[in-house]
Length: 193
Image (cartoon, rainbow, N blue to C red; front, side):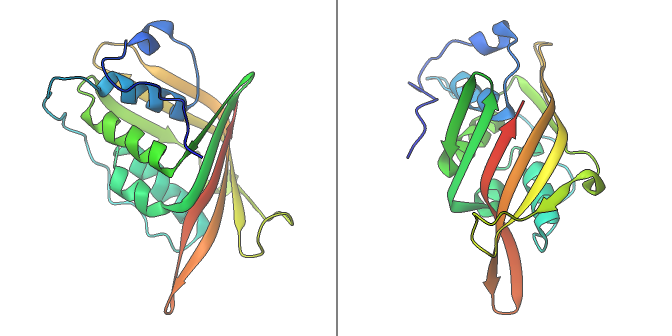
C-alpha cells in the first residue's frame, strides 16, 4: 500500500521550516521532497560524502550501512538495503506515518537535490548500546535490532535546523543468501518518540 503522506508534488509551500515541529526524520524527509520540487531546474548541491558504508554481513553493520546512506543522501544505497516488501512507520503521538520503500528512495533523492539542505547527521550511538532480539511472531530467520536514543539533525543554509532527539528505532532484518555469501536487508522499521 502506497503512502499518501506526500500529497501533490508540485510547487509546495516550505511551511515545514517555519513550523519548527519535531517529527521523525522520515516525516521531514517526505516534506523535504515537497520543498525540492518545482518547475525550475536548480543546480544539484554538493553533498559531502562520508567514508564508504560498511558491508552488510551482520544485522548491525546493515543498520550502519543504512544510516550512512541517509547521511550521504544516497538513494541507490538505501534502495539496495531495503527489502522490496519493506514497510516503515514513524510514531510521534498522536501521529503515525506509514511508508514503503519507494517513499524512502524518493525522499533521499529530493533531499540530495535540495540546495538549502547542507548536511544530514544520523547518530545511532555505539553499537554496544543496541539490543538484538527475535520475536516469535516473525519468520524464524528474521532478527531485530533496537537502537535507543537516536539523534538526527538536518542542517539548512537558512539557519533553520531540524533536530530529532531520543527516538527509539526498531529495525527488523532478514538474511539473503547468495552462494556462500549472506547479506542482510531491512524489512521493517519502526520509530517511536
